[in-house]
Image (cartoon, rainbow, N blue to C red; front, side, top):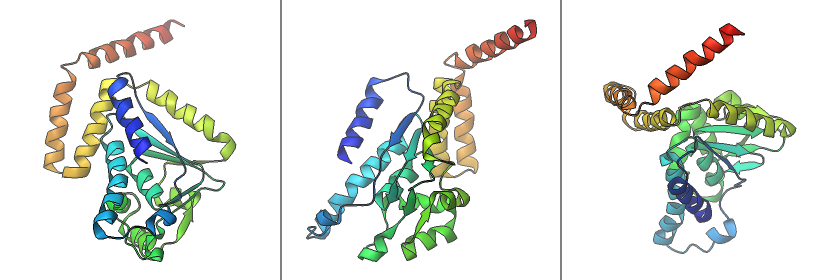
Length: 225
C-alpha cells in the first residue's frame, strides 16, 4: 500500500494535465500472517495508519480517482474503493465485504465512508456480519457506479476516459474539491457558501469563457453541416 501511496503522491506533483486516475488493484484484505505478529496497540495503530494514508491520498488527490475492481475487494480493499470517487466492478469474481469482525476486529478508518454510499442499514449489515456481496448487489446498494462483464471492462474504462476528456481540467479539479467540502461540511449553508466562492474563482482562470466559446463554435459547425 505504501508503494501505491507514493506513486499517487508523485503523480500529483508531476502531471498538471490529469483529468482522472484509474486505480486497478485487487486487495483481498490485510495480510493475516502479518497481522498475527502485531504485538501491541501502538504497532496496530501504526499498521492501520498506512491504510488511512493511502485512502486520504486518494480522497485529497486533485482529480477524480476511479477504482477498477476485478477480483476480491475485502476489508482494506473495500475501504480504498470507498475512498475513490467512482467505482466500476466486473461481474465475474468481484466481491465486496468487511470481514473484520470475523477475525476479532472492528472496521475502521475509511469504513466511515460506507454508510454514506450504501446507507446506515446496509452498512451495519456489512460491518456487523462480515458477509460478502457480489458486484451486482454492490450496484443495487449504491456502492459501485457500474458493473460489467470482464470482457467489457476495457470498453467501460475507455467510455469514462472519453467522458473525462470532454471536461475542462480546472472545473474538474474545482468540482472534486467541492465534493470533498460537501462531504466534510455538509450540503447546508457552509457547503453552499463554498460553492459560491468556487463559482467566482472559476472566472479568474479564463476557462469558462474558453469552454463556452468552444461550445458555440462546435454548435456553429454542426449547423453548417
